[in-house]
Length: 115
Image 1 (cartoon, helix red, strand yellow):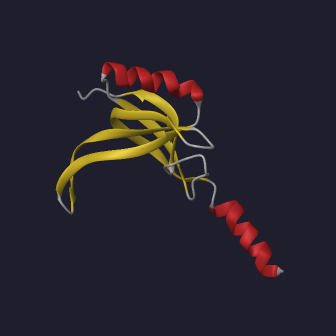
Image 2: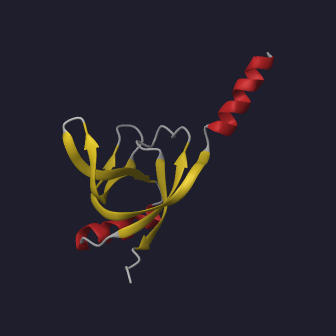
Image 3: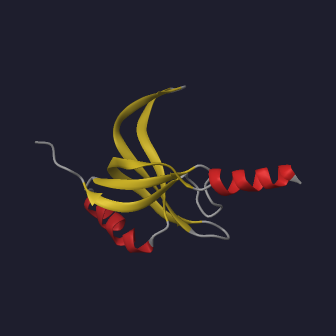
């Protein structure tokens, strides 16, 4: 019985939101409402540059999930205009079933211009 309580404690504390948080900046190039049972907004952002892969170099991209419909218009506008944005995120240790990525967007900010 003691092991069951330990497992329950681990699941409640380790599987939650807040493993990490931060911001990423780039151009959102893919954004769609996906899912068979639970729908979620899933997107990809080009962070710029390239990274090494088995078959050569590939674009440096990042996948994210949007659950807050209040931010939907801001991301859609950034896609239409091609403007770069900063996405503030919270990373889940273990993402809920209604998310494809571990990164949940909590704010959409304009990209800071370089001086």
